Amino acid sequence: MKWRVVLVLLAGLAGIASAAESGQQRAQVAGKALIGQPGPSASLTSIDGQRIDLAASYGRQPVYLKFWATWCKPCNEQAAGFEQLYQQYGKRINVVSVNTGYSETEADVRAFIARHKLHMPTVIDDGSLAGKLNLRVTPQHVLIDANGRIVHVGHLDDKELHAALERVATTAPAAGAIALAPQSAAPAAFRVGDQVSGVTLTTTAGKKITLGAGKPRTLVFFSPWCESYLRETRPAVSAACREVRLEAERLARNRTTEWIGISSPLWTSGAELADYARENKTTIALALDQDGAIFRAFGVRNIPTIVTLDAQGRISNVVAQP
Image 1: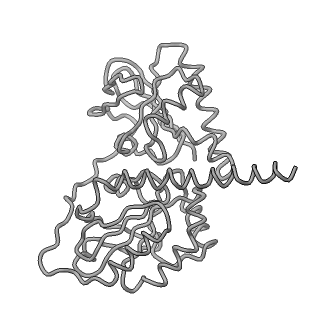
Image 2: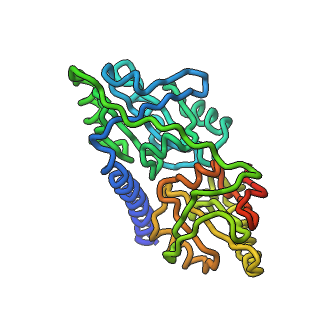
């Protein structure tokens, strides 16, 4: 019995280590295209009404953006350390807490802040900042030096993050103009009655689908980990994801409407989405929204969300998990 308990504990620790390693690997892959690039020139508003102009910091002080979610276990585990870093560096680094806004409410966010006694400004992203900074995991740390260049992208609250914070906090900006990432206005999200155009996706089977006129379609926006990972932290959402999956499979047998499941890229790769399809014996087409652009195009922030298109490619209805 004693050895059985030890083995169970070791298996649990291995699982924790594996998840952390996976998160760090994902963040590093996401950061490859970002390191050395100019930081985003985004203007943000905190939940308390504070305006935060990231570009105004460049040339004066570094910026530390931490993406997180209330339902994310490592985000909760890192919260106390995040507050300590803010207390340590808050006067030398512009520290901004960025809630992903993914299946969240403002009440959820405020409760998280109160529970963990966080004092740094917090913004709720609409998906646009996540898109600019290639958000792939939660938490995801993005550190921008005083010259406005991205110097660190990570997942862990580790020595590497602390060393990077200390380095940027003690390095003065160089003289000269500060490069900024191009500022592009986010396109307006499609609404009920709008004609959908310019949206193409590729299914896990390699089929390219351009949304528009031709046939009725129903789009199911989801994440493959919704049913399992959110079972404890968001049980109602988890149950809704399962119910929608089963109902979509049932209704898709009619074949009068083409059903397509569209997965967020958060904590999901193409291989993982394909595994999900095999494990659940999914018959409807599935596609990974590689950069979150399709989610943003339809203004989807909650999962599951169902969007129906008529034969002319117009949005006839949107139903989202509250």
